[in-house]
Length: 319
Image (cartoon, rainbow, N blue to C red):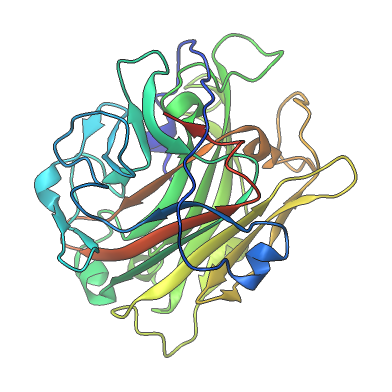
């Protein structure tokens, strides 16, 4: 949960649509293909040509240093490795946020990079040492997560229709957060969850209100013998709702479904609050996820690759 990130969502802007270039990678996992996600719309390792370490802010990169909500990544904490992986060392200016697939830019679109819409299977291959997390006293943690481009960069695009100006509505999707060990959780447990954020900042609630998945649902338990110092696959399957079928989020560890799904009915701009409504979390189907990688200081995380499969690149925002 990162309320610090969503706290700064504000003034009016416009959404810009463009096509995403399709990448070539391995075939999709069977559970992605089963729901029609066969197009590899994003496939990235980490090299000088895919990571904008120079902070140029130009289009054409897969990853950009975190530059959101008043904090900016110290790029000295990002190490590109010869094998195409990246090691993130943690950064006090933006805990758990060091690289993103999109960033603000002074162009007509207002951003560069890619954000993913319309459903997807999203997967990262990464490793870290739980002992580092235990020693660091919870000042951040290894994480692979996302925020919507709407509001995070495209300011005002997360206004809740029909509500007073400044009444915001946005999703946060956390695919993997190793945040439970410092709080007494078992070493094989991690967080993977959704947060439906809403309200006028510091008026409706302190900071923003949220409908969260229950803690017991967001707690994912990997096999007890899991060695997190070795590479593992962390996946997120997002299937949007239709008027006749519920949408759902399903989380994966090494190709196996892990923990309960979260389901929702079609979101049609119903009035707030989303609390306990069947359409809670359905705002995800109207927004576009920018992917985020980061960790806490003293808790290095190495990421080998990130891939996204979808039915088509058409619903994505790309510039």
